[in-house]
Length: 264
Image 1 (cartoon, rainbow, N blue to C red):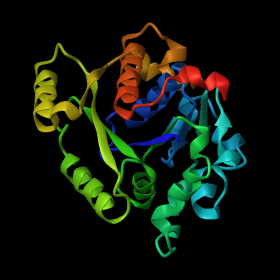
Image 2 (cartoon, rainbow, N blue to C red):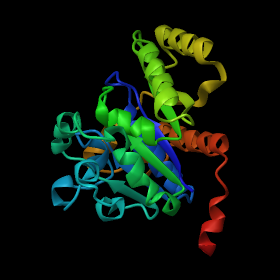
Image 3 (spheres, helix red, strand yellow):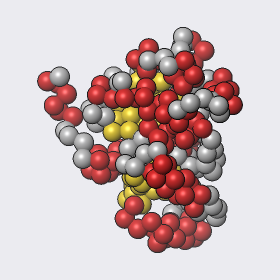
Image 4 (cartoon, helix red, strand yellow):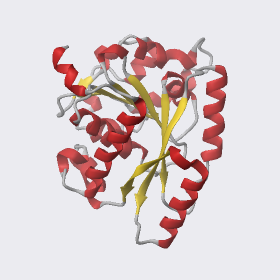
């Protein structure tokens, strides 16, 4: 049964999509069958793994609005064990179209339930908002990873996100847990960055991942080539940080060794 992780933060520019793409790629490289579901209408996670949403017959919009099977929507990527359910700008309409629909918060959960046993990990790249699309992701998820940029406004909005997670846990998804807080865009030479890292660790303690994502030019370049950092430059500090993060994710979720997949 695959573990479903929502990568969420309603604050934009914190490295959320970069983290979703590269964590998914790192888990796939480690041997885990991984599905990346792009829940952001901008579709950056889709293009970040080299898939052109316009060439796909179905997208996440069809999953939420028409009950399309994720098996039909998921597209193969350049990486053997990584698939992506693509997004398109038409997903913007789902926020409005779902408002008066019964069970609107459960659409994604129901779709994932039909394919969950085919993957070890399912990652949800959420939009920078707390609308119905993000609510679907939180309702479908087992846990949440929150990327936090190592800059002045790092903690801005985290209180609201924490309250939203608590509300979802109380009313829609009692099992939802905070898997961890991920420090991103870190420059340890910068005094402010170090202060922010200390403050985040003071607030969240052991929930903060040991892996810290550096401010790294190769991480910024990789999306323009439609490749995760592991395929663009695996020797880079950014790639090594995401591989370390994947190791922590596996340890925290208790996933069984990927070597057993060969027998399936």
